[in-house]
Structure formats: structure tokens, C-alpha cells
Image (cartoon, helix red, strand yellow):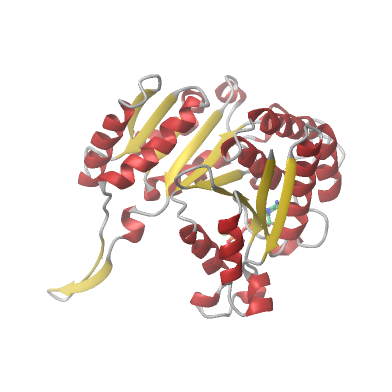
Length: 355
Ligand code: ATP
Ligand code: MG
């Protein structure tokens, strides 16, 4: 077996953290006779500097030719004064849509060594937290018509929210498919007591659930879901929701874990292809100093092994190595608990050796 990746290092700490994730991938694949082919391409500020645009055609082609994409982070103050169409972030939005990625996956877990770093009390996280938030990325009020108008001298703003049945079906299938590899429970989040969009969402998810009789489905209103996430997060396995509610809930869920430097993500479409990246930004304030935490990127690479390549044993080995690393030392972004402070490279090296 050979894994074909396109690597987009991006800006700021991007190259440093991606280097460590690649090191871990090489180690975990090499030790198990799995081949790894890497093709590097430019995205974001790095692409602007070299080609004048944030998403060169060559980058799209290289990503399409690969089975998965590993991305660092893009952006930084250097490019902030450019017109909005030419900013690094445009490259990120552009590559997601060029690759047809409509499902954003964000795990929220608590590593045993980081229990004390979670803002939730021990008795709440005691049962263990392992949530996968699945957010729809290409529809909802974000892509509806936005307008403002005046009536009787009063200014109004208006945004149109909507989802079609096929859009809901495909994201629901992603969620149920994921649940099958996990604890076989899906919670669908909507606001069906108020919104017609949500009533169509609920009916459709319920219908798709019939294709997955081995997965248990529950529905929650978004206000209740927001509360339950901090009251009793252990009740959730896969949580699926639309773009707007997912934006809010995935940020809420991510805080359960403790540090921004730990949070991985995947963007999926139809089929196994995926784009994997940490949820944090390019952290220009610490770029080049060897202080960046590479674990979010390393955990994103583990998600790639699991979801694109269906290699759960390799993914599990990386995750276990990360867990061991956190019990041994910390990068400066995580509370120290008296453990030694390591550089980006030391952290990556430890995980690569253990995995
Ligand atoms: P973006 O708009 O791209 O999300 P941002 O400015 O909102 O960027 P980040 O770039 O994520 O946010 O940085 C927020 C803070 O978190 C910064 O102080 C940064 O140094 C810190 N940070 C982000 N990622 C890491 C990391 N991997 N390791 C250590 N610190 C990090
Ligand atoms: Mg940000």
C-alpha cells in the first residue's frame, strides 16, 4: 500500500508543525511497510509571495491528484492589507470548495494527561469525553441571500436560511458512516420547534437513519445541545448539525479539550478523499521560534490515516504516542503541571519514535 499526499505547509508556524506531522507519518508508515509519497504545493501567503495569488491552479491540480491533503495554516499580518479577494484566507476557502469538501469533522476529546487543563470539572469529564462534531460546510444561512432594505424609514437586515434534502442526506450519511466506526450513536442538532429549515433537516436525517439501523439516532434542539455539551459531554458520540449551529457548537466543544494547539480537523466530501488541518491559525506571534505545538497537526494526520486510508491501527498508534507525550512533557501553550517544556521538534520527535 502507498499513500499519496499533497502537503500544503502554508504560513507562520505552518512549515514547522507540518514538518513534525510528516516526520510522524514517515515513522508510523515506515515501521509497518506502508509507502508514503509526498508532493508539496503552495497555499495562502506563501503562494501570494511566489505566484501573486493565494490559490495557484497548480495547487488545485496537485491536491486533486493526491488521495489526501495535509495542511498547516495560512495567513498573517504580512498580507492583511491586500484586497480581500487576494488574502491568504481566500486560498483556504477556495481549496475546500474546489475539492468539493462539505463535511467538517472536529473531534473533542480529553487526553488523560490533560484532564486538569479542561475547563470542565473532573466529575463531569470523569466518564471520558470523545465527541466528533460533524458540521455541514457549504449550505445554510452562510450561503443564502444577504440583504438590507428600508421600510417606513427603518433599516432592516435579512439573511435567507435554507437546506435542500440532498444536502442534508449527504451530510447525514457522513455522520452515520462515522458513527459505525465509533460508538454507533448520532445526535442531530437543529431548531425544529422554530425553523422550517430545521423541520426538513429533522425529517431527512430521520429517513437516512433507516439506512443505518445499527446506529442510534437522537434529536436535540441547539439550545439544549449547547447546554448538554458542558453539563454532560460524555453522552455524545457523533454530533451532526448545519453550518451555523456547527460553527458555534464546534467551537464550544473544542474548548472542552483544553488547548488550541491540540485540536485537529478533517474536511470530507464524497468518498475517502479529505483535507486535514489543525483548527488553529498560523500563529505569526510565535512563528520560527520552535514554540509551536505540533500535536494538532499530528492528530490531523492521524485522522487522515483513519478516515481516508482506513488504517485505524496506525491512527491509534499515533494517538497513543501523543497521549504518552503529554504525560512526559509539554509545549509552552499547555499548562505545564511541572513537566519539562519541549520545543516543536522535540515533541514531534518523541511522537515519531513512539508511534
Ligand atoms: P486565524 O484567524 O488564522 O484563526 P488567529 O489569530 O485567530 O488566526 P491563531 O493563529 O490560532 O489565531 O493564534 C491564536 C493564539 O494561539 C496565538 O497567540 C498563537 O500563538 C496561539 N497558537 C495557535 N496555534 C498554536 C500552536 N499550534 N501552538 C502554540 N500556540 C498556538
Ligand atoms: Mg481565529
